[in-house]
Image 1 (cartoon, protein in one colour):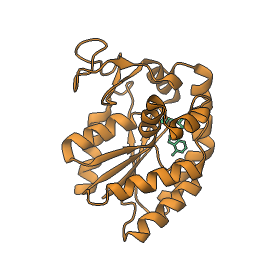
Image 2 (cartoon, rainbow, N blue to C red; image 1 turned 135 degrees about the vertical axis):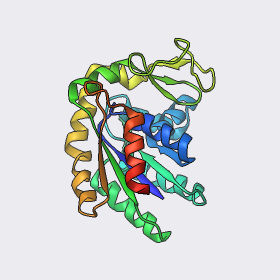
Image 3 (cartoon, rainbow, N blue to C red; image 1 turned 45 degrees about the horizontal axis):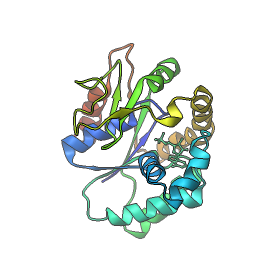
Image 4 (cartoon, rainbow, N blue to C red; image 1 turned 180 degrees about the vertical axis):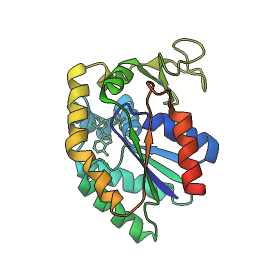
Length: 219
Ligand code: AMP
């Protein structure tokens, strides 16, 4: 089963993917996490990707697509894969279809998360991630039990570098609107999009969205 998480930055894609991973054992493939890991290790890929990520820009397709293709090959025996942060534009989406078709696979479902824009910006400012296992927390919505420490692995919680710069946040949201949002139509035409609203204002958080999503795909 291949599932794509769509939704602007800060809607909770990582949190939702983490819940689905715990409940169903499906593997989360987060392009952002792979880039950040490479940046922290100082690899060639990390150094190149950071030139774009630090400015809030997308990493070029040729780098991103081959990275995802390799990872998908490594995960070929998994029952379920959740793509979090990929595809981010139409070219990536079309290429993904080709890569999967060559393996006799296809995108099964797209979970499109929707959150009011003012809540998104506040969430990104309050987001903390584990420096070791990459679990995501929010200081207000779902804080760790011990402040600054990951519940899962005891790792230190940190602010993502690209979340601390308001200009980069705005740029990322702009790119989402122009490049990533058109994917909703692309996948709607295939009839595989499930929209899930996540909003603090109506007290509908990630757990509820996952429950609803699973009930829809599993019947
Ligand atoms: P994320 O953790 O998904 O918000 O990704 C963090 C950053 O990594 C993005 O702002 C982009 O610079 C880069 N990135 C992640 N996924 C992609 C992708 N599919 N294509 C291009 N750049 C990406």
